[in-house]
Every structure is written in C-alpha cells, then in structure tokens.
Image 1: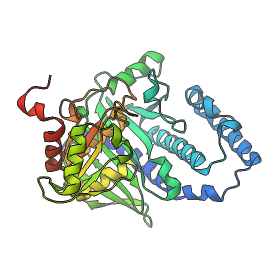
Image 2: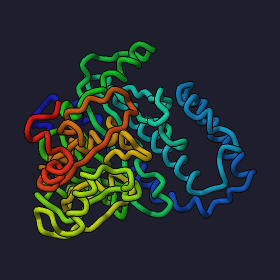
Image 3: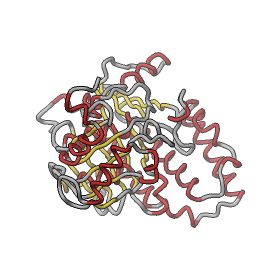
Image 4: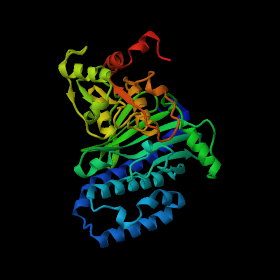
Length: 376
C-alpha cells in the first residue's frame, strides 16, 4: 500500500511506532488481572502515589494538571477495578507517547472540557494528539478503550485515526498547541488512515490506509504482527445487533421498532437476530467486522441526549475503517457519520455502523425522511 502511494511513507512511520506501542500495551493488559493479587493496603497505596508523582514530574506540567484531582491517597478507593482502570489508562498513554516520540511531537489534550456531559471518566488521562515532525500528518489516539473490562479478562483496545493537517505545526508554543487541536477537528471522510488494536485471547491490529482493510495478529513467540486477515470485507448482512439495552427506556420509538423487528425476525433478512454487547467498542466492532451485523449507540432522553461515545477519537476512526471494509455508518440525524465535523475534541455523538444491508434497513426506520430529501 505504501509503495502504491509514496505520500504514505510518513504515515508508515507513525504506524511503526503504533505497532511497537501496541505490543507493550498487550503485555500490560495480559498482566492486568494480577492487580487483585497485590496488597492494596494504605502503605502500598502511599508508595504507589509517590511513584506516580515522580512520573508526573518527569512527564511535565501538562500531565500533572490532568492528575491533580487524583493524586492523593484518599482519591483512590480500595477497589481493584478502579485502580486497574486508572493504572492501565495512564500506562497505555505513556507507552504511546514514548513510542511516538521517535517520529514526532506528542501533545496531551486534557480531559477538562466546557461541557460536563463530555468529561471523560476520572481514570482516563485523555486523548493523545500527535503531529509528525517530517510531515503534515496528525493522529488522534484513544490509548485504552474498555479498560474497565481488563480485570475480567474481557477485550480492550486502542483506537487511532490519522488526518492530513491543513496547517503545519512546527513547535510546541501555546498558539501551535491550539492549532494542533484545531487541525484534527475534521470529518472522518478526511482521514488518511485509521484502525484499532484489539487485546483479547489474541492481539489483533486492524487498519486501513483508505482502501483495503488489513488485519495482523501478534505472534507471542516471535513478538511480531503476522498478516492473518488480508483484505477484510464485512458481510453484506449479519444476524447480530450490538447496543447497550440498559438505555432502551430513553430510545426513540422508531429505533425500538427496528430492534423489535430484529428480535422477532420481521426484518428484511427474515432472521431473528442475537444480541451481543461487550462494553468495549473495539471488541463489538471487531466481531461485527468479521461476522456482520450492526453496532448502535443512539442518543437516549434519560442519560445520553447526544450519545455516549466520543466522535473524534472513537466512533469516527472506526466508522472510517468499517466503511473501507464495505460497510456503512450513520449519525442517526442527517446521514453518513463520516460527514460529521466535530466541534470539540471530546464531543459525543450518536453512531450506527455495520453491514451495508443492516445499516440500510436501520436507515429506513430512523431516517425515513432522508430518502425523500426532506432532511435539512
């Protein structure tokens, strides 16, 4: 792919760093369950906090601001799941930052946002935005998706998307940091590359440069990624739907009617669908990509009026990849999710993606007016 498009050489250097980071994160995830065998006494937590503060001093002022609210002993409950989530998220972020330093500058976008509804969870250190020194490419990375699953040995993942920056960023002063943030506020259709790394029973790196989707599995003996899924193509229709049914009371009647048709077999495929929901978007999308079906995270009137997934660094890169694999995506309001331009880094947005026939059928339920050109 790089040989066919020489401009992608600079993207390739970012991928080499991502590959190196994903190997290390995979090892960290595999050891996550050991946290329950660790003594979480006050003395242990105090020592851990001391080590954490030393790490923050080395990382610089920007990361220290992120951790200020969680740097004391009392802010860590004696709960292994919370401790492990925070530990994994921060370690994964540091691993990615260190790997990317080989190819470009890395800036942290702090979790602080003007909208409380978009505030990342306390254990999340934020999204990484990287700009390459030798090119105009910028990358957005979600270091650890689904970290709450790690202790239960359920899949987690890293998500990334790469854009071509409209303006180059060549130093780290405050003005250029803001320009760097603004450079990634683009619709997913502008991405030059995107993908994810799944950490589960196997570690699988799936990505696209905007054409074919390729999947590589980490060989633990060689510690190298081996091509196992060449030219991945999503099935035209599946028999599984994935969504968080705990939010169903706040969903629209149209969307609930669609799900009822799937459950009862009154859909176009005349097949009753099974429900599968991991709670890690990477895991759900990986299954959907291989077996077909549809992934949905709509808005709901009770808890998530604008959905609960960040557009820029979660749903947009994965929607781009699914589309390159022959699938489709929707925003549930005006059309293709790839056309939506994020206004803020942490902006949340409803999303739907999966097999083309499944998404087309969903569209007929939740966006019937669009077909007649009535959507503004």
